[in-house]
Length: 606
Image (cartoon, rainbow, N blue to C red; front, top):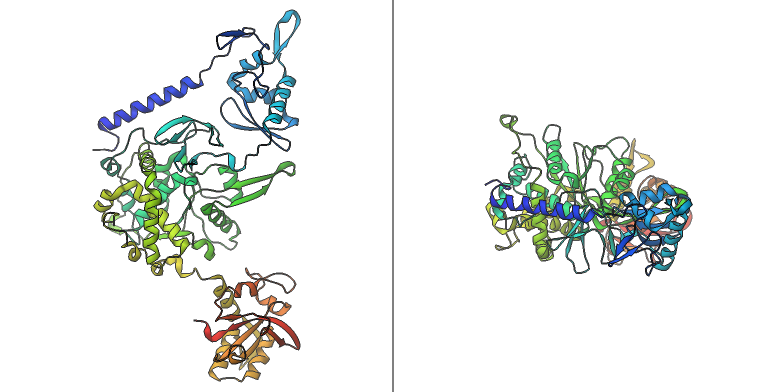
């Protein structure tokens, strides 16, 4: 049976209609005709004759004052949106903009009287005075993390909150936007809301979403569709998750990357920000306080990867909810906290730093069999599928943390570090909430009932492409040093630092000759036993500062200006049997001067 047909579909459509009617009635507030009184608690109150409330405002004011931050006054306008006002913008046009369809209220609350007591307009100065008085009484208020936009969040009790634009979904029920437990949820353009009725396993299967995902030519046909489904689910949850995973799809032209992006867009609909050409600034200006997902197609490597790596860095910050500060107009700063799941694709991905690889799941698409080239993706009902997925997440959210921890434990047995457990554990747990044990079993995947330990082998860290280049910072720093060339030539060949140390270990050159050449790079080889008793081979003394050694690290993550850098700090992250830096042993004479050094026990490097 198709997912949205039958009595369940009719019941859901009926509930949607009821919700729409409730919202319409809520918005239909009638203001009195010009010059007529308002009826408040059974009493007729004439224009301008009201008594102020606790904050000095008229009763039932459609614009709510939140407070001030510096010269900015924050209010909720008549449509439920967050608005900012400065003293220079507090004119008639701005006031009308705040009251929108409730402009009749202005003529009643702050009337301006002409000859004969006839109302000729509203008093903008009186509005301003009342709002500033209310702001002074309410105190300081800054948007920051108090404002929550579209997408998923949690309340103080850990319940899932879905901000759908015109309403909030909390514990399966709909409430109006606005202030909720100290956070402000502004009214926004609507995005798809959860399916109006609980969704069964048969309905999930009937959406054909799994069939559509499995139809792609994945490198891991059993695993990759589940990871993509997990990302779609995580994308809905956004700010509710402790960790937001990145997904990067790699494949040659014609393998279906754009079709996959289109499928993801079809499921998420208006809940997805998608683009094929953007910058980090463009993303955070678009996203603002939303926790909605971001999809970037064709994030290709190029001669200058500054822009694309900036997008990847933003995705990394969003994974953990990193706070960024950006300058604004009039020298006012803006606080931006990214809580979005990122979906990226490319033929040639950019050179991604290890700290970003650890937050990312990379999946590969393979060329389709020529005999299947003409096949079309199974069709899905884009008006139904995403909403059903979201309803399953809403109904099953209370199980998330327990399932997430089970997956993390299984992945830990498979060699994943904390970041790997966060990333893959989130993807698997979110997919699990959508499918449940019965559908997982039907699709040939491990279930909670049977135990999740098979994932230790299915997603073993040593088998993942993204883990191959995820080398520790200190190792990358030492690798750069050892593979750097020295200026000296020997036998017509310019040798690397590591090559000279290897020749020294083998006895191909003497210590004196090795140091003559290493001195050209401001380095010194030392018998290892002089540093650590009983150690064999040779150690390499690397000055903590100096123009010559600084030149080797110039333009890297460990370089700096004027012969200073952070290479020594990076190397000292290595285990104590690899690096020695205590002051009793690290002072060495190089090129005629005593220098503080970081000493690398080359023989201890594996």
